[in-house]
Image (cartoon, rainbow, N blue to C red; front, side):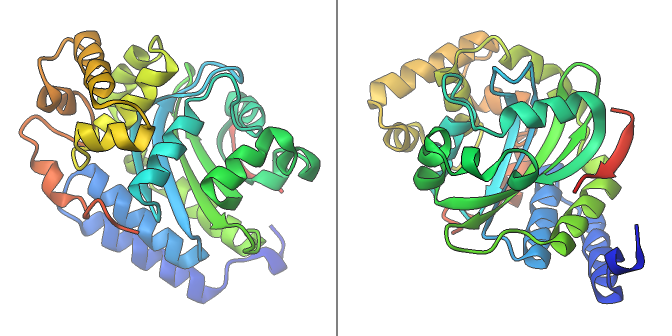
Length: 281
């Protein structure tokens, strides 16, 4: 890294301060991830963010998401985002490149412009994503956790009409996501993401929303544009798949709900608006 690419002292101090504050949080891991992302958003001036811990198969399949946290999106937008993530027939145009990098790198940080051409990004295959979600620029940072598709991935987003992420913001994101090993790996999700893989897209989408205890089933139905009875049927199918009796037991299988649900108290209100580590330019 040349001198003109070095992180300024003020940014380095801000990153260290953020990491120290996160390390001191006494709450469960989702609360720490949320705090880290809120701080990263402040440093990079992003409009929204998402964090998933998931298991990928190949570029033709959406990842099996076991943990989904986000900020800067309302409930309706979260539902649309979940549907986009699990759309196997029209996956986001950058997924193929992300999956290829996942096979050859342990940690990488790349913007959409380093994954696909502008013609592809702004073309008809991706317009429904840009227009439907309202985000024009996306920056990804991925940590590969095993050799079987298990990974931790964050995305920072900028609204339509806002500038793309610059080199400084990409470097900050890469450094922070590379330092905090303990925020990525989770043995429970390493197992449960394998159980998610066989599920069809509509149940994967339902699961992403159902394991967030802030959203009632009737609200999820509205967000997905389906009947309440259909949402209840989807939920029952998930309970059977994971061999649990109800939603509380389902939450116990996932990171955002430990067995006694103490971690739920740490969440903000739901209406809150390969072998080398490298940053590839």
